[in-house]
Length: 199
Image 1 (cartoon, one colour):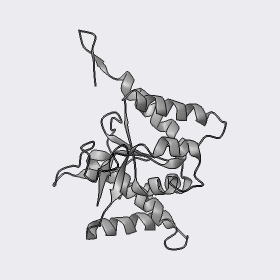
Image 2 (tube, one colour):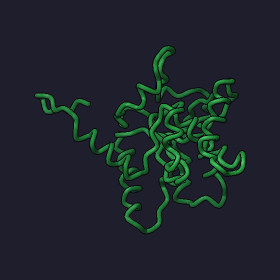
Image 3 (cartoon, helix red, strand yellow):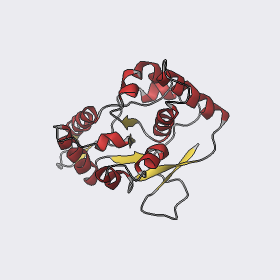
């Protein structure tokens, strides 16, 4: 289990009402694997999505920051991602973007959550040593619990998406793919007679 906390409130230990969890009885995988408007659900993010390398990707990072500041999406940070970014050697520009955001808080796991975490890790591991991809499994499980997307450039996650997809109600696009998706949904908004846009 986990909760959401606001990074701007150091005293916050309670869940934020930013996202929603499907009610009991809902076929979560079927519902969440349908096209999902990223403007109305939490979008979890990996630290590597903010990497800058002097390539065209830098413009995508700027675009993501712009979209969030405009209030078009809500970015959240899985607990494990936030812990990694808190490392002194993490790039300052990544810390600057990740640490102020709403983040999940690590809590105890139910038996079903432990089992799910192990299945995700197994799907990611392949021939790697046991435990090597436990952190990535944690990121994905947290992202799925509180969001509909997990933006990442992690090649292991991207390459093994087919095996993970059967386990999680989640999509994990690259940053470029998510920007395209956000822009596409924005263009699909219906214009009311008054000129106001409706999602």
